[in-house]
Length: 299
Image 1 (cartoon, one colour):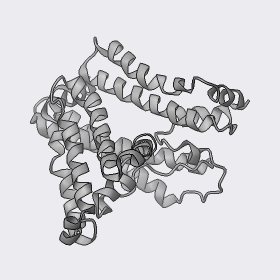
Image 2: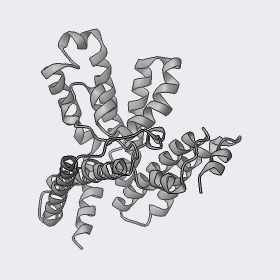
Image 3: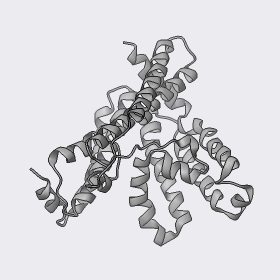
Image 4: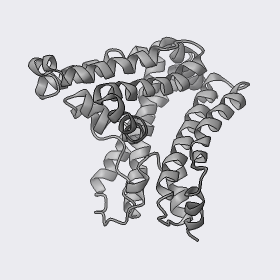
């Protein structure tokens, strides 16, 4: 059975309902998660925002009247973190993933599991900051670089155009390339479609760019600072720095300094991303969310 009837319904007046889950799901997660530990609330909020965005992007695709199977629709909504529904449901012929790519994805997952397990083992007697950052590095490797890559491979093997959401971010020579092409393309797709593109004609590319980074900061404040009950605004400040750095790269001064290209561009890009990371993953989050999560994993 296809989703043709669902597509027809979404095409009717009331398309605002496509946005409703993005409002209701995080609010529900916040209410439901109150009695639970902070790390549970973090995961609930993250899942709620992800599902809300998934439904929004799927709804946007469905209003075009293109019928897809319910199984493929469920797969996009629940088993794929990407946000480009048009690409995912396309019928383009794709080359199958190579065995080497499968091995690389599995290796990243394994390394992430080792780091996360190490953090769990030393959480009771190790320095909380070191343990917390070690656990976060392991978790990011497992999820963003490992599991999500494996899901990309599985979907491409099945014929879906599911590009990895991470594409060697360490190779970026500019912040624009890092955030726009190489790091978490799922969020990039959503931000470009629903923030940057609608705003660029109204306020110009510079302000639209800053709006994207500030929106990202607000989302990260929601899933990081809110569960931690502290560090308010620091994730938004982090992304404001990224936005300012991106604009500097495109300025005449930035071009004269060699930003955005070559060795200088790569060094400055990675430094701008890495040095202020304690603003993004601030101490209240590490100590009140990450470390208790690692401690719970020892039970």
